[in-house]
Length: 77
Image (cartoon, rainbow, N blue to C red; front, side, top):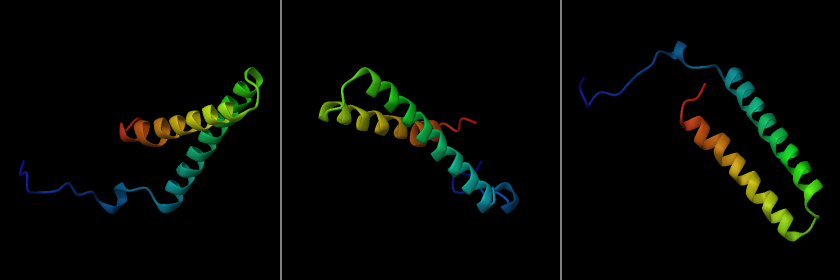
């Protein structure tokens, strides 16, 4: 292997715009449903006040990071 050469793929190896858009839409739905489910669960257990809203916001950020950054960077399929 030559370290100066990059890796190149054929244009056929890439997903089309519409396939990528569909995958992104599915990702947003999965993220939204998981956040909604956890929000309902937490609001049933805890009272609605500022600390609870802060907790929900932190949970949403953690889910977003785990799903959109950590999981996608591992190449999990």
